[in-house]
Structures are given as C-alpha cells and as structure tokens.
Length: 383
Image 1 (spheres, one colour):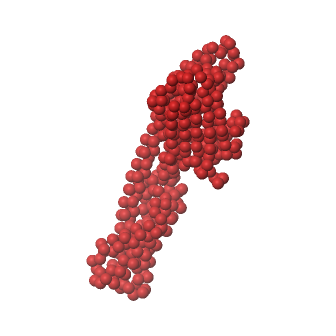
Image 2 (cartoon, helix red, strand yellow):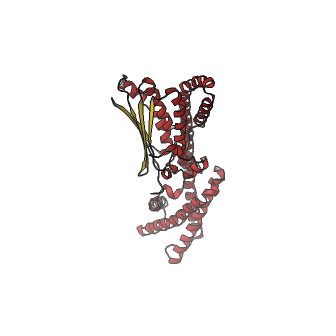
Image 3 (cartoon, one colour):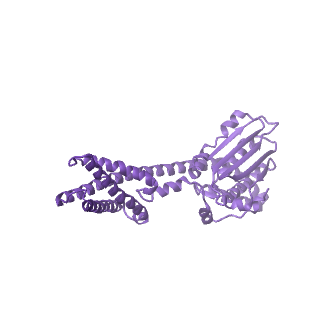
C-alpha cells in the first residue's frame, strides 16, 4: 500500500492535457464547433456511394421524358452516377478539410459557401460528363439540350444541398439545446451537493473551531486551512480533476472530521502505484461525498470504532473504487434505513456526464458491512 500523502498534485493544466476520459461534454462541444458535422464521418465512403446510386436513379427516373429505350435510360443513369460520384465525394472531403475555416464564419456565410461549392462542382462535372458522352457518340450535340441538362443538374444538386443544410442546422440547434439543458442539469446537481455539504458540515466545523480557538489555536489554524481547501473545491463547480487532487480533498475532509470523531474511524487505503495514479482522473468530490455519507450514516450513529477500507484499481481501461465499511456489532443499525441513505444517484449522474453512460455507483448493504463500488471507464494510453 502506497503512502498517499506523498503523492504530488498536478496543476489544472496538466490534468486537462492528460485527461483521456470518454467525456460526453467534450463530444458535445466538438459537435457544436460547426453546424455541419464531419461528412465523411456521418457515413462511410461505400455508404455515400450507395446513397449516390439511388439518388442518381431517382433523378434519372424524374428526367426520363426524352428516353425512348432502356439502353438510353441506362446510359443516362450511368452518366449521372459517375457525375454525382465525381462531384459529391471530393466535395465532401473538401468541406471536411475546410471545416476549420468554416467554423470562423457565420452560419449563413458558411452555408452559402457550401451551397456554391456543391453547385459549381455539380455543374462542372455534368459538363465534363456530357462532353465525354458527345465524344463517344452516346448523345447528339444540341446546345439547348446541353445547357438545360447542366442547369437542371446544378439546380437539383443545389436544392438537395439546401435541404441537407437545413437538416444539419436543425440538428445543430437540437444538440445546442441539449447541451444547455445538460449543463443546467449538472449545475443543479452540483448546487444540490453544495447544499447537502454545507449545512451539517459547516455548523459542525464552526462548533469545532470555537472550541479549538482558545484551547489549541495552532490546531484551529490548521483546521481553517482544511476547511478553506474543501469549500473552495466544492464551489468551483462540476469539473474533472486528477485523482491525486480528489485524494487530497478526502484528506482535508477526514482531517476536519477527525477532530470531532477522534478515534471512531480507522481508514485503510489501497492505491495504485504513483506512476499509475498520475494519469488517473475523476469528477471532483465524488469519492469525498461517498466517504461523507458513510460518516454521517454509520460513524456518527455509533460509539464503536468503524473500519473503512478503500481499494482503487485501474485495469482494462476501467477505474474501480471499492469502499468497504464495517458496520458496528453492538449498535443497532437498521439495514432498510441504511439502504435508503446509500443512494448516490446525483454523484453517479455527474460521473456519467464526464465518463459516459457505463459509469455508475452501486452500494450493497448487508448485516455486517456496506460495500460501495465507484466504476467508470478511463482509457489507459500506456496499454
């Protein structure tokens, strides 16, 4: 077991750069960079080709009025398929490539550029395809027909591009509304945690300070430093911090409570190696809030010594924190009430917000112990 007090704290910038969690907020932010998603990520190339195939068939059916035979229909269809493939696929790659430029433009301006790009590409490729067909003798030259075909294809391509732009804009606004709702929910949950932390903890700490100021001023000063660090973290809002910082917050909290609880709590930590801990992250006050709930509902309800063991592992890209709390043998603890209080829904929701839906906090209460497991995905780049 490592001495966790010796672990160094990282700066917030180091923590931010080393974070490799599956952060849903970051995914939403990436989606909101530009209202048009990365088009070649929307569908694979073969899926785009399949879409172009049916799109070309649809347009050929619409424009079949001057086609007398099936061979003419097939020539028309194949020419449109080739033309659409040559115009659409490179245009999609170009739009993705120019995405950083488009993100600096307004939605209207970027839409105009995308619309013009696809319409020009459609017109140029249609012209080239028709010239090739003229050279091989598949169609007869007629200037009016030539111009009408090019204009028809350009207008149809522009129309469907506009439809897609409107669809992407609608999805963009929906995702933006979802993000705002998501952030509001996180803020509300964080406010609930603050409210739960503040009342009982604040007044207990004040009472402890009052008793220490006269009897032990130096210890009172140390207590104030612990209180300051803990409350500063609680009011900085929902955020991702290094695991070492979370351990430090737990240390501050336990140092404060140790004055009041004396020897009623014995902690045991089983932590990964220092090099492993350096790359681990977690949402702020997650482990601390679990420990706090254990103290409130178990340690403060008895005069017996309570043993709490915390084991942390990081294997196969998942972090598992197991908290074992031994229940008192001589004090009556009603398991039903304990199960009601061992509800970590808010903490689990905040954890999922940063690490994905597979993150969870589960607690099991038996007649002898409480076992709480904090589990969330965290990619390990060293593997």
